[in-house]
Length: 51
Image (cartoon, rainbow, N blue to C red; front, side, top):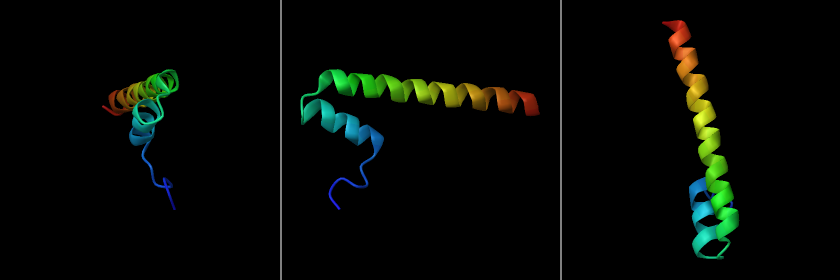
């Protein structure tokens, strides 16, 4: 089906440059970056704890 397998980054890109929802896409991008940062911090502390 149409757009059923859209990745998060492609969805953000489409919101910004196809639909001109710049504020929404900026919010999505910052949220995605924050989620990645949280996952990386958790992973870092987990790896340090094992060593």
